[in-house]
Length: 333
Image (cartoon, rainbow, N blue to C red; front, side, top):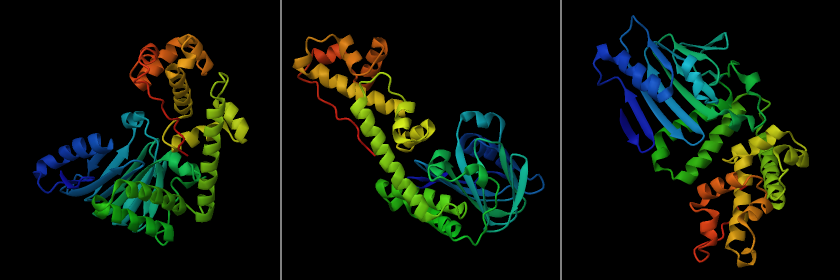
């Protein structure tokens, strides 16, 4: 194993004695790194070279290998990872299996699989492939149906797929010279190109309009929660009804933003409680009253959440107002 830059790791069999390669590859590359079973062809000496790049919201694997079968099933599915897997066969003969379906990938073709379901990639000849793993929620947020796309071959001449392949290749070679903010933007670009590669329904204009609408709805949801955080009956259903969308859609809005509905609401309420505890005008209010007034219905839960958030108990904050600093309510959208 070697580091090509701070973000890319390369695995190769070049310096592993041939009798030890299969066992090493199964354990380190298969079980530890990718959480898959790896079985090389028994009649060919194993040779392989893999390069991996992992970023928030994206994992890329550029792999060259002799014939082998890679499968994800059984205990590996228990990790709860719900990724969309795009396999691009760059060279050689390969077969993909998913949910009792099998398809052959010709050179340049690609196919989508779900990482939450049993699946396998069988390389029948020496070959080269590029695999992308993206959280399912990020693709579904572009209003693309993963169920409809699974195991439907993507032709090699589809422009979005070719652009995605080139873009991913650039990330595998140039990411070490790109700062974190640009890399985050690149991840978003890859996700958009993946959505576009799945078919004509994922039109760029529609994708961008959907993203703009999601941003606006998330901002409305956050504003509503901030304005009504003291209501103890506030729920995902309440906000969904306000926005005229489903509760699951509201949850996805916050997941895409890197948080959850409950975590955001709790953060707003805790910030309001901290502000009241630091304000001498509320010095006569009991801590239980402050917890109740800011939307908490259980004092023990409030105390635990407050200490986890600020590292002090509510009583300690009230007794040391000189160091109590008013926290800002997070308003990302």
